[in-house]
Image (cartoon, rainbow over all chains, first blue to last red; front, side, top):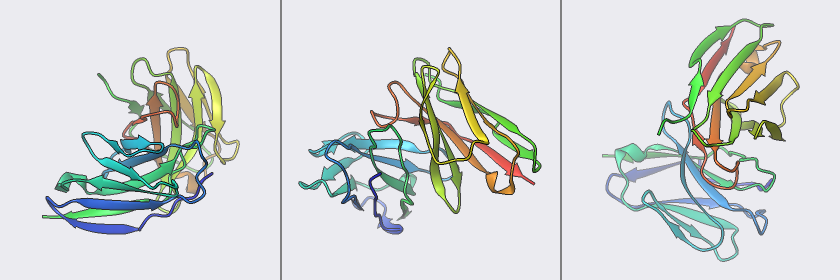
Length: 109
Length: 114
C-alpha cells in the first residue's frame, strides 16, 4: 500500500484559498489519488480524485505533480463549513481505501 | 435519493457479547465496505462486499465478519467483544467498488464496549 504524508493541521481564513499538500512517493503508476474529508460527527465525504492530470469539480481542484509523487487539494474560497479532516488516499488496486491520519483544517472567520 | 443508512446509530455492549451492525446502501449500489474509526488508529478498512461476495479484507481478527444479501444490504458482526472494539463503525457504498470512484458513507454506528 502506498504511504502518504500530510500535515497534521492547517489553518485558513474564511474566503481565502487553501492548498492542502500530500506526499505519496510510493504510489504505483496506476493508482488514482482520492481525497475525502470528514466533518465533525459525520462520515467521510468524497471530494475529488484524479490519475495524472489536474482535475476540477464544484468542490475543489486537484493538482497532481508530474512525477505523481505529490498532489495538492485546492479549496478556492474556504468557508466555515470546510473545516474538516482531509484525507489523501492513493487508490489501491486491490480495492482498499487506506486512510492515513489526514490534515485537520480549521477556518477562521 | 436516500443515502447510506446504518443501524443502530448507538449501542452499548459488555465484554464477551457479540454485536451485529446493519448497512443499507444507496439504491443500485452493489459494493459495501466497512471501516472502523478510533481516536488512536484512525479509519481502518475492515472488508468490502460486492454482489454478495467478500472481495477484500483488512487486517482484523476473525472475530470481525460480515455478509451481504441479495438486495446489497450488508451486516457486520463482531463476536466476543473486547474493550478495544469500542469505535465508530462506518459503512460506505459505491456502484462499482472501492477505489473506482466515489464512495458514499453513512453516519456510522457508535459502539461502546464496557
